[in-house]
Every structure is written in C-alpha cells, then in structure tokens.
Length: 295
Picture 1 (cartoon, rainbow, N blue to C red):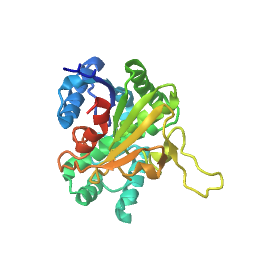
Picture 2 (picture 1 turned 180 degrees about the vertical axis):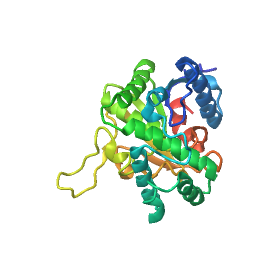
Picture 3 (picture 1 turned 90 degrees about the vertical axis):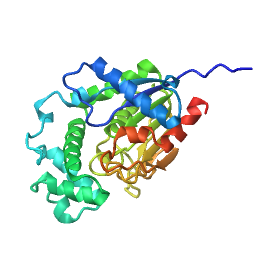
Picture 4 (picture 1 turned 45 degrees about the vertical axis):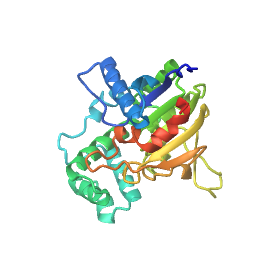
C-alpha cells in the first residue's frame, strides 16, 4: 500500500545583509531568492525542491533608500558614526587588542579587517568589504527605535509571514534581528519553528541592547538583562558556526529565554564565511527541519 506524499512544508525565509539589487524588481529578486534558498535547504536534506513551499521576505530596499545609507565612496572608511560605534562594540566582543578596538574612528578599515581576517583565518579583502557592508546596513536598521526604515523592514517580514502562514521561519544574520522584532510586534503570528542562523542578536552594546522590545531583567540589577522568545513562536532553534565572526556570542540561550536548542555546526569557509547557503545546507539545519517534513 502506498501512502500519499506529505504536503510541501510552508517556509518563510528572511535574508541578511547584502541582498539589495537596485536595478531589479522586488518580484524578480524574490523569485530568484526563493529558488536559491529552496535549492540549498533541500540539498542539505537530500530532498527534491518541491518538498518546500518557500516564500521570501525582501526588506533590503528599505535599508538602501536614502543618502545616509550610501556610505563613503572610499572602501577604507566607515563615515557613519553609528556604524563605527557598532564596529567598536563588535571588536571588543571579539577580544581585539585595544589599539584595534579603540582605533576604529581613525584607523583605516583595512587594518581592522586584517586583524579580524587573521583571527578567523579569512580572506582580508573580502573581510574588509563585508565589514563595511554589514555595519552600514545594521546601523541603518538600528538607528532609531521607531524610524521609517526599521518599521518598514519589520512590517515587510510580518506581512510575508501573515500572508504565507508558514510552519517554519528561517532567518539569517541581520534577518534574525528583523524577524525577532517583527514577531514581537505581531504576537498574533503563529510559527511552529523559528530557526535563526548566524545571528548577531546577542551582540552586547551593538545589537542586543538596541532591540525592540528592550531586553529586561530584575529592577535591582542583580541579573543581566535577557530577551524573550516571541510569543507566537512555539520553538526557537539557533545555529551558529564557531568560525563565524558575526554570530558573536554564538550561544543565544545565554541572553534569551525560551530557546529550545543552541546548535553549532562548522560551515566555515575562507571565501564564504557567514554565507546563508552554508548554513542552509549544513547538517544541523537538516536535522532541525527533518521532523517538520516527517523525515
């Protein structure tokens, strides 16, 4: 007796930094990324692409609309004061020596990138380009709690989840921050699994302390502040590569309540560090998604 195949798993994917395609329509970008994310997820699972029904929340255009998001034409500088402040906090968390961590306001970006590249065995030129892009977009998103950029990006993610009604939401990099805030802003959205990949959510004094809602703790300050799993999320799993300099610190459960699993998987690649495709196809992602596909 043959059993009917289980229906495709509905998923919403939320991207990280660097996804803006200025000369392409939103529909074209979404269509391309749906194919890309579906292929890498199903390759990791060893399944056909038709086992997923994936939608893609494309919020990048909201981070790239005004002059404050364009940055300097010089690739060796970060001329956004908030981006430099976030970069300094990140370097301190990585354990950079004081001349590196404190010199980000004046030293060329290549010097900072060289230290990070050596620390994580990365390509120096690509690290410099990534740092500039990452902190520009993160600063643009986090600049104000209720600014139009932040609200628009958050509402785009919430709208995709409301429209697609996924069982699973998979968010990568900055997308984990946007998704966390979107789900808190819309507690009516019900998600069986929130899977965060390469997340900077717990990065102190850069991301964590700027989240909306603000992480809380005892009024007497006896315990450090903590974030809370969004109310509509039944299960939250986080995956971090120990060699990913963005997923710092890698154990989100130290800063957030309600996380079911904090997994690590070595997806590190000198020329592809922090890439979504490496997280999407890794063994930890496949093991997390398998039960939702009746595997």
